[in-house]
Image (cartoon, rainbow, N blue to C red; front, side, top):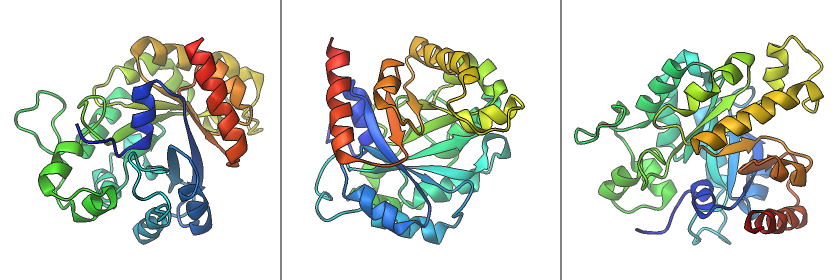
Length: 281
């Protein structure tokens, strides 16, 4: 197989803890900093601010650095949080986001398996020989091919599928589980074919509990977070922490990928070493 393009998938396949950044769509300065970093992935947020495909195209381009553009996997591989929730079933948003070159989608408010199933279909091309969830993504892959650095339509179609449903796929569906309903349904959600990972969502999760402090470190969340991590581990699905300030604690709790609110290269280097030693130990 050719080298991986998706940095998040590459790290997870090796058993490493992946580290990433988080930025708002249209924040070109933040995109440039992420592109120059050692981040395995970056979450580009279009949900609350910055919805616009033109801005997305520019943001993805600013993630590309001449210093690192030759590397495989691609540093700061973009996972885009779309502005629609799972139950909106807006297949056209998912299609256009992927057509710009996103290497994955972060699906907000994922709480019902039937909604997740429809998003999986929207991210996959029709494959008559495939017995997995039938795809219905429309085909115009030129921009995405260029962004992923692929030369032929054949190669793009072969790799533009969901990992790990397709072991050779370079696209990921990451479920943002951010409500009491999602936490109660977590076993069903991670059992859906096509789900690549889960991201813990404490902010909206607190609101779903009727708590409006937005204190994402509130101890009331601890048992829910532990249950989500345990369910993902049991299902073999990677689980992520969206904004860890205590990286060692997030690693100790079993998170497989972690994004940080403020990227610090020295701090991330220490965290990588700590995670490697802990997993080998």
